[in-house]
Length: 183
Picture 1 (cartoon, rainbow, N blue to C red):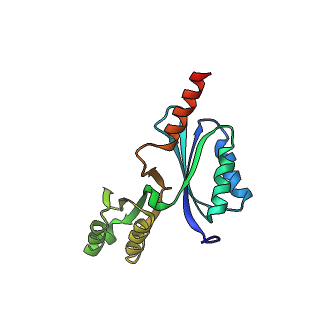
Picture 2 (cartoon, rainbow, N blue to C red):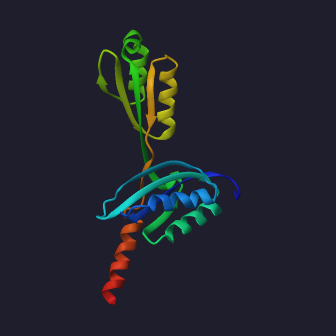
Picture 3 (cartoon, one colour):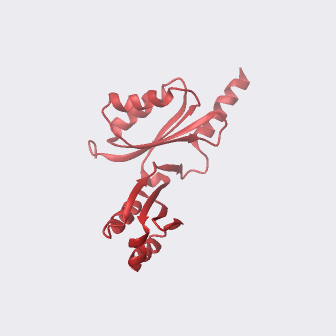
């Protein structure tokens, strides 16, 4: 399947230093690969941040990108995955016109059918939230948009956990620590 584009998720762990996000995104820019989503947050390891990046690419290209990112001095570990290797979630938020929602019971049924939550209601708008995968979040948007009730819509970047019982960066840091103790 060489040459065929697949959606890959890169999990990058780095020290918490200014400018590292720019260095990481520059690797994608140089290779002319567009980032589909990007989420950055503190990880479970003190002082280490986790970047969850999705991009369409072929495997050869994503391997090169991952290796280039991992060479950055402040990057602890970088790995790439396909969707079947991860637990994935995004959040979709929808601001809907309350008068339209109240006029049409089908809208509430669609919200319930998608297992979304109504998190705020006032006379002007109601806010709905769905935690799911991209397709389900988009499907709810399309279903609601048919009623002309969507005032605003947004979707978060992907967050992901590996299906492994141990995060690779934990193994990597433990190996590094053992190496330092031997010196």
